[in-house]
Image 1 (cartoon, helix red, strand yellow):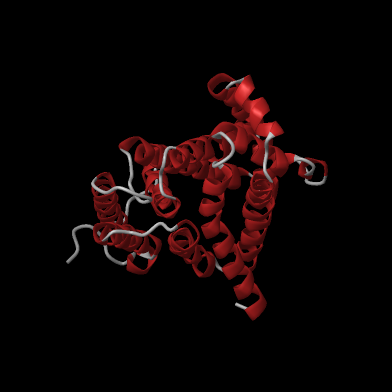
Image 2 (image 1 turned 45 degrees about the vertical axis):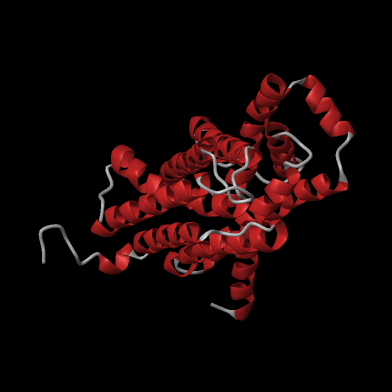
Length: 301
């Protein structure tokens, strides 16, 4: 990998890691559904006037938009609004990798490897430790059961979006950025509808009239940097290099998320949370590098 592309990959990882801190900052002054609605409005417009509609069946574009855009971020924004620490959220949501494997086995008849099962068990143990520790402490890294379940719901939605993406990619050649932009258009209506239903007209009006510069910068970061630039750059790297060179770099995202949350928000992990975080990362490593152990089969010593 060239130095320029390595720097680009590092830049994307940092942007995606800090993204969770920015979400928490944006939610300080704006309710979650409205913040998400404005984010995806900025992703879709004016980009849809310059990026062609992907040549995919509308039902799969709708499925992708409702899972990876609406489902994932409605759950994630609600979780962080309810107190889920940004750093821990950046780690827990990576369990999408395991949910993706499970859904692909159930829906697409793919097969488990032993490392997948081991990774799932290790990571689940790590999530349990994080939850137990977070519920027993007070302060910036306390975790409520509701916030944890919402974050896992975001991971499930991401995983379902990955399944939809696999089906789309299997039947057609689609650029990642076109899928991201047009799926954002799908998510705008349900986000605004949920904002009207659950947050109310008065809250929406007050939030828009009193919007701060900090919230506006958070929206710009979430829409332009974390979404459009991030996915475009990641798609470029995946198209230029083998997947095994690029995909493992995403494991650095929660590392950046935890460090940035500590530096910018004062979130510090307890000893038990550190152990839980390590177990989740180790489970992700088992899953990501399971291909190296593909020669191992069930029933062989």
